[in-house]
Each structure stands twice: as structure tokens, then as C-alpha cells.
Image (cartoon, rainbow, N blue to C red; front, side):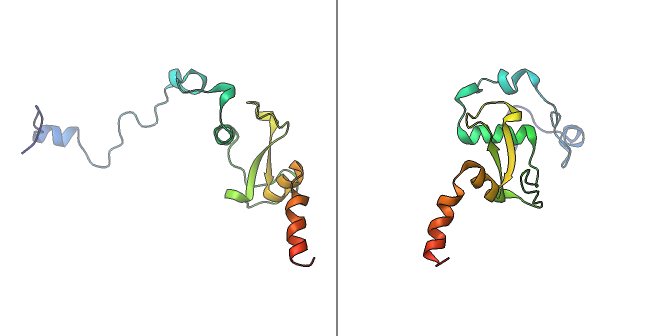
Length: 122
């Protein structure tokens, strides 16, 4: 027995409730609540992960390192690197680098490689 006030008649089932039919609002953007206009917008107080998600949403997810030109990279093999170190919402302040080039760019590569080389006799 159906619950609620209204019963689904044959007319309703045939007209309104077709399986596989896309919803009425699919693909509709609501610009009045996007980006800076959204109530949860954090501005400069955004987290590290939130900033990287914002950059990926605006610049996409390319698969080529801008430094060495290595292509076909995905996931953790390629990173968004911040040029200034200030994590500004400025899209020109970001580089797409492979993991190795990103460590070299930040200056952490020698510190990570030295213990490995020492442990393996290199």
C-alpha cells in the first residue's frame, strides 16, 4: 500500500516517473551560490587540500610535467606546485610538476635521496 497523501496513478507513473530519465535540474548551474558567493567560501583561510582542489578545478589535471616534459603521469606522480610558497588564489602562481621535479623545486630532494643512498651503499 503506498504511503503519503497522494497515490501514484497510472497517469503519474507513465508521465513523471520514468526510469533512466535524467532529473529536471541535471546540468543546471546556480551562479548565485558558486565560488565567492557561496556561504562556505573561506577566501584566504582555505586549507592546503582545499587550495589544491581549487587549483585543480580551475586549471584541470594535465599529465605532463612543465619542468622535464615527462608525460602520461597521473595521480600521485604529478603535483600542483606553488611558485611563491604563499598559497595565493592566483592561478599564475602554480606549476604542474612530476613528483621528482617538485621535490627538486622545493629543495627537499637531496634530503630524501641521501638517506636512501647511504642505506643502500650508493
